Image (cartoon, rainbow, N blue to C red; front, side, top):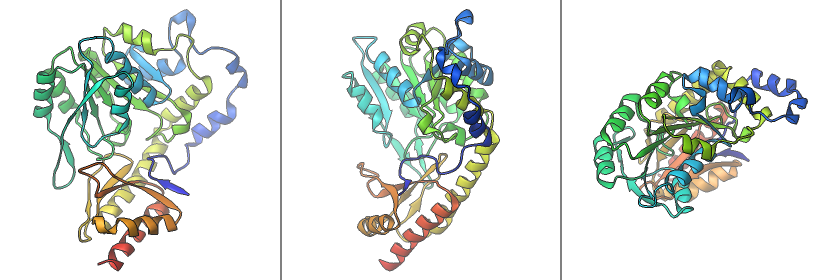
Length: 347
């Protein structure tokens, strides 16, 4: 089965990652990863601190970005008995609400707005709603899944400057590396705003979801949260060395992202012109497509018949849309041809 419904990685890891796995010294598993004499979490937190320009004490590590998101939501929605409210984007990952529900948090949705080419956040509306609701958490996803739209660093800064400092802003940047290789804004933002946590992962751009390695950066003055989320004895030595090898071989993954971009353009050019179809601009490793709902059954059967899976959305408002993970060129080609064939045969 070819899974193009999970936003996983259908390419090969970099040579550096392969070599790091082959060369790994198994004897290192006999020791914890914490660097005791320096009071630092691990070699990965030190590497990330140097790469992103954020002091090591404010680097957050986790069992994937998912783990950090869950820890943050659980912590901040329970650290103030008078405020367990979180604002989340419309048309976003169902998991955000689910982890808030686990601690009886209240989630309120702010809208995304469809444009001619994509979906967009309304910055002024987010600020106004946050000032009115005064939630403990404001969650932003950039790029957002499944819509693929993102925020610029300037837009994030505008939001941060316009909302109460008592609201913690949690930005899920799982797909952010597809947008740009420039990460200077991360340090600029978290060094300026104490109520900001930016979360990234090795799962998407670096194609290592099975490694279960996530990382983040938080503003100053959040020692209690860091104590809550950080592991005193460290993390996973093997995973950390593989993660560092991947981070050092970004050129390989940039080339993969370029191949994904070619697939994105193909879908736009060849499906966007079909009657009833709309292909949205995306800054991530997937693409969202609106299709005539009467084709749903035929599309599902035809795609399953090729031993493939794509994501048919069922959330109100985008239940006439499908999301396709950008795979290898031959995978993209096959899915595109199947959709065109079904559309042509069912005019």
